[in-house]
Every structure is written in C-alpha cells, then in structure tokens.
Length: 258
Image (cartoon, rainbow, N blue to C red):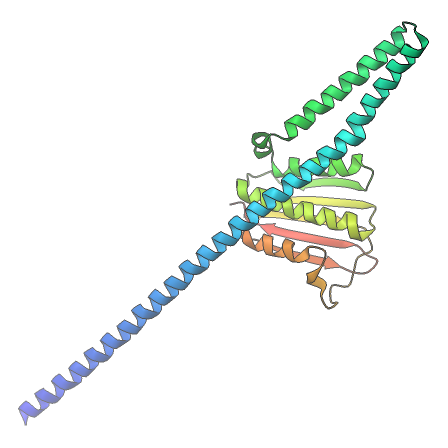
C-alpha cells in the first residue's frame, strides 16, 4: 500500500512537471513570437520612417528650388532689367549721367547680394544648421514677401534642440499645412505657434479661412491631411485637425524632442 502511494505520488509529480514544462514551453514560444513580431514591426516602422524622411527631404528640396526660381524671376530678374534700362537710357542719350551710373551700380549690387543669399540657401550644411523655428520663420517671410497671406510666428517656452531627421519631417508637415492653407482655405492670415513643453513640442498652424466639415465622408483623403497625420506618427508624435465651415482650420502637432 505504501509503495502504491509512492508510485501515485511519483506519477502526479511527473504529470505536474510535464504540465509545468509544457506551460514554460508555451510561454517561451509566445515570448519569441511577440519578440519576433516586435522586431518585424520595428523594422517596418524604421523603413517607413526612412522612406518618409527621404520623401520629405526631396519635397523640401523641390520647394526650395521652386522658391529660388521665383526669387530669381521676380526679384533678381527685375533688378537686372532695371539696370539694363538705366544703361540703355545713357546709351541712347550718349551722355555721361553720374546719377544713372550710380543707380545702375546699386541695382547690380543688389542683384549680386540677392544671388549670394540664394546660393547660401542651396547649402545643405547651412540648412542642417538652421533651427526649426528659423526654418519656419523663413517660410513665413517668403509667404509675406509674395503678398499671399499675413503670416505670423509666436513662441512660448525656451527653444529645445530637436533631432535632425525629426526636424526635417516636422518642417515638411508645417510646409504641407501652409500649402493647404494657400491652395484651399481662402485665408488672409496664418498664425504659427511653437510651445516648448518639458517632454516635447506642440506646434499649431492656424488660419482664418473658409474651414470645412471634418465629419464629411472622405475628409482625410484630401488636402494632404493623411500625410500630416501619418508623418506625425512616424516621429513618435500625433497630429489633429480641427475645422468648421466659416471658422478656419487649426492643425496641431505634438512631438517629443528625440
């Protein structure tokens, strides 16, 4: 009888050990599966981030080239045309007029100065050294000079450094928001706010345009809004759009610093 109890105890212990081993095996298998899935998701997310980074860089370069083309055509071209007219007047009159010579020299000097500024804007190293607020102010200055809208920049809190790749994507989100406003909103003014919080930055792009119904079907399919939201996610942040017909639109981006 005693031996029977021992055998029963041993069988129970073996079954328990087998069950415990099987349970541990399931835990290890589940852990490995989750780990593999996490790694795959991380690789996919990194690939998406790299793809969006490259896309943002190309879009920013395209925007820069378009702006440079407009600057050369509208600004430098006009100045040089004026200098040509001034020299032509002297040629026709066949008289030396110091005032016209001075004006022509000033016009050519201004054109050369503008061309130097344009050449500097093509420098990748210079672009990398510019902070996100300065990049944004430069974009608003361009819009103001073109007379498209009244753009204003406001900042709260002490400026914090933002990781370089993340900065480019955030700037592209701002650019895309501004392009949406210019193309679709019918706005007359833009306000951009940078709010530096302890754990991240809150960027708000607000216009006084026509606005639209965000509850409408297909709302996120147009105006580049899906790009804004997906890019914000890729930098570890989030974006939201608030709008109402007749009351303008506000795009809010929350992002950590690194």
